Length: 315
Image (cartoon, rainbow, N blue to C red; front, side):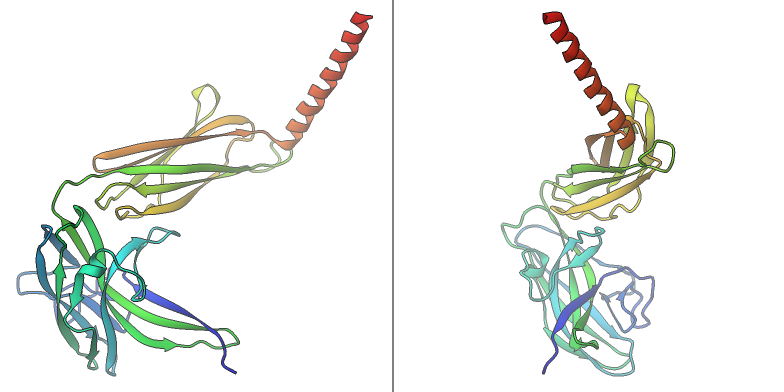
């Protein structure tokens, strides 16, 4: 009986400071192979940076280098890039997904290559920008995929395919519109039953949305105010994606330790990037359960007393 397996594609697109001996260019690297732009005697490129008009055809070359002691065979393809929902990391579409931008416009001269042990192969590719391409940034990558599936062990095996891609940043000439939105701000607050007997915490979740057509490097400031305008919290947030791609949304969360236990708080998130700045807010009422019960009992008792006195007054 064949055991079921789950196929995972690992697309490693992390920048690396490793210099590959065959060329003085930075490489995307996973320890077994690397992918990088071809270099000249006067040019070292960490990634592909292309600026073109609609209808333009651009030609360049990508290098796939094998760092192992045996030949490796790869599937070469172009892919669109996106931000991962979990942390906003740079990722690319798989070979089976539909490509709409760079992934559809760029074509390597060879779809499969065999790279000798400790050697490299240079492959030309053509990037044809459509006449009706929208202005702005169209990020992607040229990917070298090892199509072999490394099966795991156990009743449910996990099949893994590994891939490495050299990033390709295409900007189509035309009007650029940097725009950023903060959406769906939510505050989840927890606190002890009895005030002062423990710590209270809050988790502030929100969505960063690049609503423009250029890649942004956003910054986010968190500010919370209590009653009478008192500043409860003010900080610049970390863990923000360094590159928020056009049209992409990322859901993020920020913990707040030592949140108020009895207060009305207004939380404001302000996101900014070059030539754009937007804010969004949410409020929450910090009220311990014990205090709420006491207040509720007091209101009920006051209501009962009021009704009794009213009946007596009517008589």
